[in-house]
Length: 452
Ligand code: C2G
Image 1: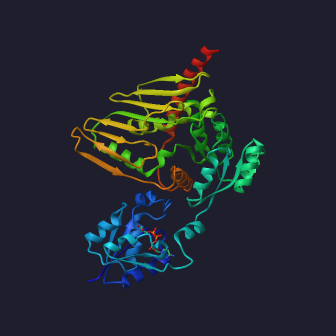
Image 2: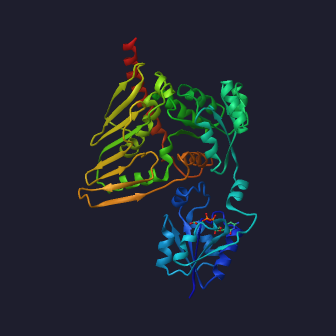
Image 3: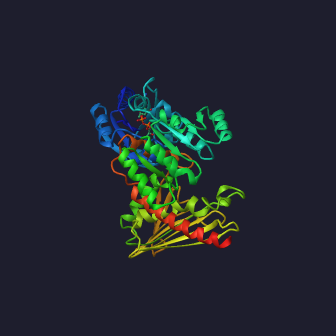
């Protein structure tokens, strides 16, 4: 009996999928179809799948071509499956030509011609409403956002805004995006959403204005400097029935989700300590090194460290203490924030003029988890125990350089009401971060007053 295997997401099942399965079956006597999990698809950069796995599997089954359906959930599984099921032929559509030639050492690899003129992405784009988003602030991060949006279906950057003419103009010329320097209300008019990537001190005002105009908002961290304002903005979003999301990228990465599950799943027992560090040496003269009012190590990078702490231990700590190493201008070049919970401790460290190891360590009663640097781009981690010979290694991956597309994809899902409750970064967690930021700013201001 000749056994054939093929794989796919089979999202929004269409004629191309049908024809592929028909011809795959004709290649042999028994066809096994591997259907991808959403987690695996997200790791390999396929975002915004519409159909749940059950629907995708049923659709494959209903063609009558598959003799067996399996789930594909990790990189490297194809080799395992070919050996486990004694496969003679591996086949995929011609969009993958060359990519799986290495499997020739295990079985025969055949690429079948792809059906022209139809794809899940086309169907998604036709049936889904495209969210028109405008970027506020055309500085360093705007081009990255623009590029990453192109990998997410259902969203398109159509405009940008920057009151500084020079920056706005060069952005418009370089990226061919209509750019405004004033008339903020007109800029908002044709948009459903905005991405706020302006200087820190302008975030909250732009967020407020956009929410008031009924727009969905994705805002760079830190969204506000005070607890009260964070509460107010999330309430406003609720009242206007729009999505408000703080852009802490790590929260949306598949590897970080996996890390949280493993840590909370009991592998290391009770969690007793979380220690997270993020440092990036700023260029002399850069905002991170000079803007002592609204920038510095903690305001730029502190949210990253607070994220795993609040995700793992909750936001109801008993006490928080913070200390900084300050530069000449009173800016913090390094800040350490320590939380005390009823039965655990946590530390978030942020450096802009100090370099340290960017690792995350979660210590528990049975073992610990080490997420190596850069932990905030979670690509894998170890669960370690008293016995140094016993290590459980978890591999994760994501597409793109910095994971921004996962954050954008989450934003689109929330706008479209897909994906259920907030859990990756809740309003309450974001508000709790604003509270710490407020405490930090008071302390730093006191230090700066002493310098005057
Ligand atoms: N396909 C096709 N014609 C189309 C569209 C898709 O022949 N117009 C084929 C693809 O080449 C693939 C199968 O249908 O062989 C499933 O396509 P997708 O659902 O897009 O899945 P894909 O991302 O190609 O999964 O491990 C997963 C696999 O590596 C590939």
